[in-house]
Length: 395
Ligand SMILES: *Cc1c(COP(=O)(O)O)cnc(C)c1O
Image (cartoon, rainbow, N blue to C red; front, side):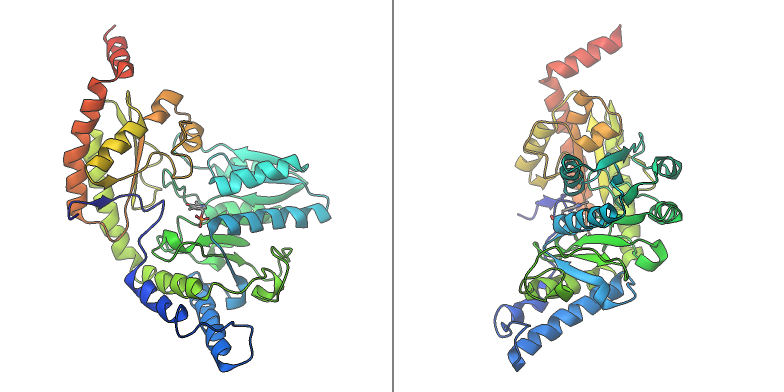
């Protein structure tokens, strides 16, 4: 499969060799339970402690104990939001602010809270996919308990001004959480510099293993426990630790943050070459701001075709891509992210997301540039919708 191109790194990434090697001993020799008192257990405990230190270091958390291990990005988001909602309630605060194009781990959690009496305001993200700080400020109320805004969007890759947004929340005494699942390992993250109270990450989005993630919680924020049971995670999230998982996540993150500037320069060049090359296709458009955007994210619409057909044809040519997010494709609903940008349904349907990591090459871009335009042409030649678009533009 030398011609195979994996261009869906926002959905998940390949486990790095370093992460895999680091994990192996914790499946075999070092199988002890960290909570037990003999040496075998202590080895596991040391591995968990070391992973926590490493991850805290990678995001510049003041203390390793500010990092709590969980099962992934969805769990981290759920904990941060439901926990902050519960804290708010104690002070009579039942209002939460977020944005229209968050991941479903955030949006569906907010819907759940709405059913339990909370009020939610979703900020517009406008055509460029960016929240306006002044609109956040205007939305804050006396009873606002939490602002949760994603760092980088998983579909269109736009990057929000998190530091500025967190400052606004704090000016009004409101907690600030960010779902940074798409950003950690890709852009430099310094939780102290950003001033966030909580930050979610997920191992499998930066070449770590699936089913493991972390929530950074600033010291002093007393979130309620997520899972009740043993004393793991300082009594906040019970359950025997996923030792191999946290070790793999830490190894992957250490590797990922080593050469961010060089890698991003290379990815940005590849991304822009691909966008420029695909933009020559008639009635195509780039979704989201081109500058405030993850270096490896290309998201485009091609009018007159269905994203799903495009994906199937790309797959036949050995190219793995996505329309919308992995969680929503498979359904025929257009992406809530693209609708939030104000795109009409029929255009949002013809969208394509290609996301790259450091494992992609210039040859991958060449291959997509040679394969994709003829597929678009072929699909359009069979599309009644395209015929209508062309005819309408004639008169
Ligand atoms: C993937 C993703 C999640 C969910 O992470 P899991 O580890 O798969 O639960 C949450 N938010 C964003 C932005 C994501 O990209």
